[in-house]
Image 1 (spheres, rainbow, N blue to C red):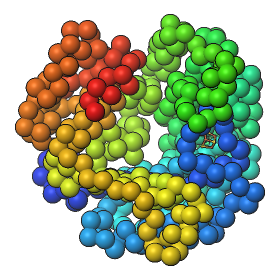
Image 2: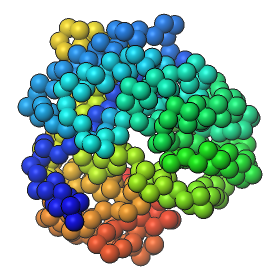
Image 3: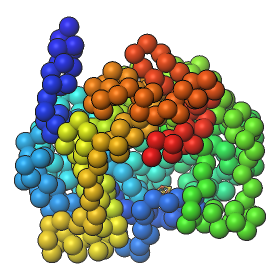
Length: 399
Ligand code: SF4
């Protein structure tokens, strides 16, 4: 009962009043993985104090703005890059800065992405004691030949050690990233990866189908014919195995690539998929604020870490591009972000905000219903299992 009245209260809050999410981008990695298209930099010496200072300065600027001032946070996410290359002292310092500007919701989720590196694992107790309450570990695989293919620096034993270190440090909440669909991977390899992961009873698993992104080493190798992706049938079989094995262990699929035990969905990502406000600080970080039911504003920072720091030092802000979203864009985002989640989108909420129901707005929905790619379930519209397999080709139809 208490929960329902709180929910109703949030629904009637004006735009700009609800708790929001904060993302902090740490762009440094020890080596660039050949499949990665994130905003990452490999440098001889990571300018940790300077970059930490820039984040604090940028945070201060936003905290003074009318839109963000005095609001409360539902999640904080240190992403990258590899945030675990930063010491607990730096991460703790950033958290102290954040707490001096914003209120924290009582059940705030504070996540940090970590690599299973022996040096990074030594930081885990320090992160925990300074307030981080969720780690997201980039395991990717436990098979030596797949780790080598993916260009990872860690071994399977490093990952096992890191998972034990996470437990020892007192993290009840953590996630593990796996990549499947690498050329040369068999179903037996994948089953073994899932089993290894499940041995550590993770509350959350992200299982990503390997995609070959432009401007990556893998893309060049693919163009040269040196990488041959798996067939569609093989990928479908792997996706089915991931879902079945994880469901069998109590991890429910709640998004295309994300699985969680009850109550362990990533609050940070769910807020993003639900179109909530998020503030991103750091090199290349993206932000979004909803200004009304039918429009918002998004912007992003200078991508290059050095130029980001210079711009912050000179003017406090490093925003390079911003745009206002209109009714059409907002409706599209409502659909393609909401449909990422297995529970789908609320039809009545779409109609209330955009003046028509989804089927009237997007005539192609009736064809997808007939093809079994989308289904109506109670008051929601959601992708079927088949629809989730081809989600990207559906999402582009909204824009
Ligand atoms: S560690 Fe992660 S962020 Fe860094 S290069 Fe590899 S995949 Fe990209």
